[in-house]
Length: 242
Image (cartoon, rainbow, N blue to C red; front, top):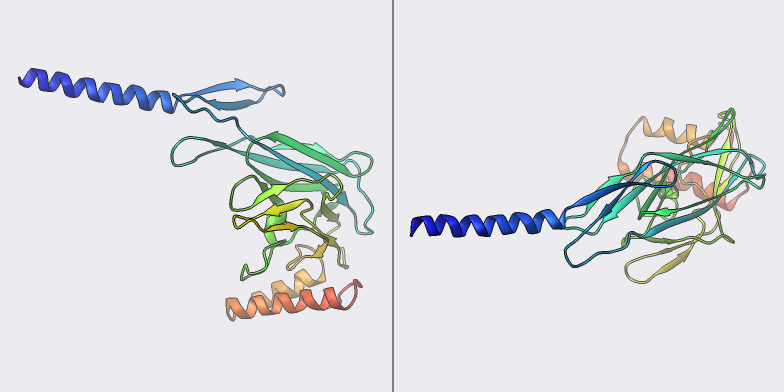
């Protein structure tokens, strides 16, 4: 009787292991570029990996398109298995064309722009609102996804615009995520050109950094950042002076 019990338990656990093994089996294949991508097989439910798309435009300090800028990015691939397994692909790069445009269209659900460079010029990105209450731009201007929390819909006629300027740049430039963001409640936001809350380059960036060194409180930090941004938005696009 004990032997039968042991034998039965062994069968149950063996069967469980086989099922789990089938659910989590993963085949690695090479894509056209020669890098590895992943495909997942399941016992009865298989889901095609979605695509993430971004149409972008890189501009300079005078709002001119910048050809031959290098855009470095990374794709997160989401496999439809329990507890959401994340697989980061190797970073890739694409160069802008003669009109400063580029397109990324790949399998995955989460695209992260890591860097944009041209000779002696750097990506002017938005570090964001310290309180996170105005996140239509913020650091999300570098992330584009198909995740339900914020699904991005690319639009070639409304591209994401990425300024790239020298570190000595002393003006203000507008930027945009382009396309549309769709939120879980059904809200659809068409992204338009806006000034950054906390630009990574320029006089306003220096003013904010100096203020944040005092670290009075997160709320006062946010108030200061928003006030500077409102001044730029409502007054002019002329360079800020220290």
